[in-house]
Length: 265
Image (cartoon, rainbow, N blue to C red; front, side, top):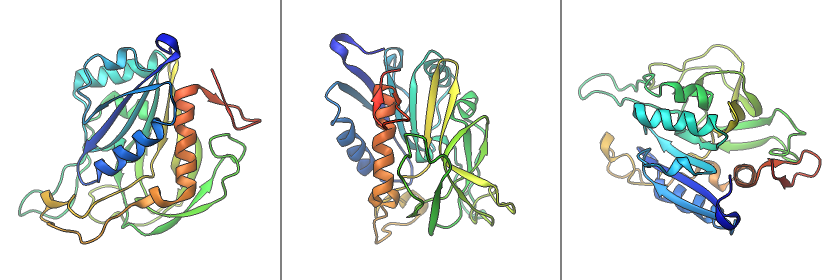
C-alpha cells in the first residue's frame, strides 16, 4: 500500500479530553519522524476527510473522541481492506462525565458502534492510578520478545472485550473502579494490555498504556490546577521499546519472530 517512491502514508488522530495531548502528539510525531518514508497527517478527531482511503497506518491517541456513523464506516472499511491501526490508551473510550449536581460518577455508553468490535474492546472503567505489574503473555512474539515483566504507574483498563484477541501483554486486577458506573470486578481474569485483533485483511494493535496528564487538563471538571504532571508509561523504558516496535509493525509489516526485525508482509 506504500505510496509513490515507497512513501508510507500515516494518519495520526490525537485529541479528546482529560489528557495531555500536546505531550502525546509530540512524542508520537518524534517517533514517526525516525522513519524517513513516513508522511504523517495530523487530526484532533475522526473528521479526517478522505485521508484514510490511501493511508497505510492509522495511529490514534484519544479519550472520549467518538466517531460519527460515517466516520465509523470509514474506520471499519480501512481495517477490513488491509489497513493497520495502532490504537493507544483511551482510543476505545466513550465517557459521559458526571452531571452537574449529580453523583460524581462517569458513564461509559456504547457509542462506538462497530468500531468497538474492530478495536477488540470498549473501555468500562479503571481503578485509581497506582503501580501495577505488566506480565508478558507470549514471550516469543516479536513485539514483546526480550521484555520481562515490568512495573508501571498508569491507568489499568477494565474493558468489555470482543474476542478473538491475540494477547501479548496482560495484567490482573480484581476490585472496584471507583468513580465509574461500570468496571467493578471480582474475578482475577487477565486484563489485556497489548493485543492484536484482525478484521478482514487488516489488523488492529491495541496498547492500553500511555496515560499522560498535564497540570491544566482537568479544568472542565472544576480542577484549575492539578499541581503535578503525570507521564504514566511514557517514562518507562519497556513502554517506549514496545511502542517503537508497534510503530514498526504498522509502518513496515510483520515483525520476524526469529530475529525481531521487520519484514514486509
